[in-house]
Structure formats: structure tokens, C-alpha cells
Amino acid sequence: MISAVNLAIVIPAVLGGILFLAALYLVACYIGFYLLIVKPPAFDTSKPNPLMGPDFPAMVKKLGQDLTVLKKLPSEEITVTTRDGLRLTGQFYSASSRVTVVCLHGYGSSGYGDFGSRALGYLRSGYNVLLVNHRHHAKSEGKYIGFGVLDRFDVPVWLNAVNELIPDGEIFISGVSMGGATAMQASCLALPKNVRGIIEDCGYTSVKEEFEFQLRRVIGFVPRLTLKIIDTMMKKIAGYGMDDINSIDAVRESKAPILFIHGDSDIFVPTEMVYRVYDACTTEKELYIVPDCAHAMAEFKGGEEYYKRVNDFILKHSEILGSE
Image (cartoon, rainbow, N blue to C red; front, side):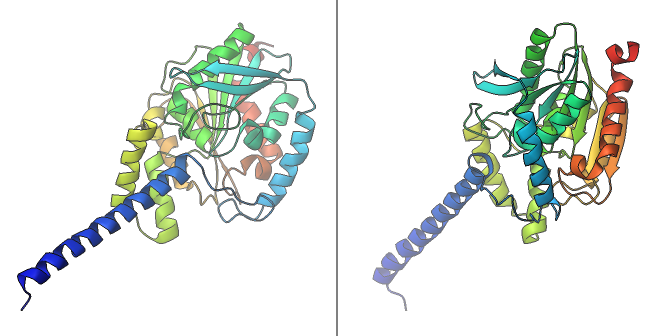
């Protein structure tokens, strides 16, 4: 029989072990939170990336060549202050046009990182370009990545900055990946009336659904308690939750036409998400599925067809260009 003395030793030891394991688990959850919205791990852009597809190194090479050209062009640094007091930076390129494309980059990237090639394409098509750097990216302030949930409220601030530069102009919003989700999630806000359209490329429905999809793909299931704890940390520390906004709900109340673009081989933001947001959208809309295309590769894989679709969309909805 176990004596009272033995129980007095065993029970505290067991409880101590449980508390130790619980503490380790919470530390692991915090590391997950940290790696998601504070310090995402970097990866080698010179090698094929399983999430981005086998064409990724070739796309990165082209991007580098295009950036060399782009950065030699005259530009102006633009700064704005968000409603919560952060100073964000962007780069404005003028094509001496009254039509400006505001470019919203993806997770862990920058205006140059995701829009080096696209910016050249927009400029060559005759549009001004504003390359935005989201909070906690590049030179923009902020402690946490906003995943679009926070960044959507920064979009009207950027649009107002463009209207100060070109008071009698028109604006189109172009977003890729997290930037695509940001564009969709901002589409239901009170945007300036001269926003003529949104070009949304491979954005997700919500942060929560994107995390759940990746967890199922990588480990085969969703550890819901872990996800709940990380979500709680996000709310308490970063000020937003994974499910605070859903792109599906946002586009139901969109104030502008939307061109939805997605690769048919996207395993980072699954292609099925674009069909759901497209079906939900109640404004004028178009859908362009790029064949044999992985995540955020539509411009590279689509080539001339990509720019034809984008330019046709802009020309269709621009009152300025339509009257020329």
C-alpha cells in the first residue's frame, strides 16, 4: 500500500510535472505566435519553394532584373500615419497620369518584393504606381504583421495620400496574397469615391481559414487548442484575432468592382478560396484563373494575357481613360 508519506511526495511531483509540461506547451504556442506575426523565418529565394512552385527561382530572377530597372526610375518616398499612430512608408512612381495603382504586397515581403515586376508593367501601361509597405514590413513601423485584419484600415489612409498628390485622379487597388486579402477586406470600408476598382490576386478568405488549411496540409489535422491559444495571444498582444474579418463577408459589401485572379495550382492559398469570394461578391466582378500557376505567380506565368486582363479591367472601369 502507498503510505501517506509517499503520497505527499508523489502528488506534488506529478502536479509539478503537469505544470512544467503546461508551461512548455504555452511557450511553444508563444513561439508559434512569434514566428507568425513577429519574425517569420526566411527562406532561400534561389531554390524551388514547395509552396511557391518550381518556377519560383525563375520568377525571382526576373524580379531582380525588373527591380534594377525600376529603382533607376525617379520616385518619391511617401509617408502616412495610421489611425493608431504608426508611420508607414511607400514609394510613388509617376507616369504623368491621372490614374494611379496602389499596390499592396504579401506576407513577409515589401512593395518592391512583390511588385517590382508588376510596377514596371503598370508604369509601361501608363499608370502611376504607389508601392505600399505594410505595418511591420520594410521601413514601416509596427511591432506585428497585421495579416490584412489591421492593414485594411491603413488602405484609406494611403488612398487619401494619393488624392493629395493627384486631386483630380482615379485609383485602382492591386493586392497580392496578404495584400489581396487586405484589398478585399478594405473593399467594404468607406473608400474615396474615385476608387474605380480592385485587382485581387491570390488573397485568402480569412487568417483562420488560411492557418487551418496549412496545418491540415502539413501535419494532417488542426490542433484546435493550440490555434485557440495563439489566437488569444494575438488578441491580447497584437490587438486582433484570426477571425475578426472574412473576405467573403467583406466583398458582399464591396464599394468597387473586383477582378479576382488566382493560380490553378496554388497550394499556399488554395484555389477553392477564390471561387468562394467570387461567388460572394455582389459588385461587378471578373474571374481570371491562371493555368499551371502556383501562389503569387500569376504575373510571371500569365505574361501578356495577365496584363491584357488587368488593363482591360482598368480601361473598363476608368472614367478618365474611357473618355480619352
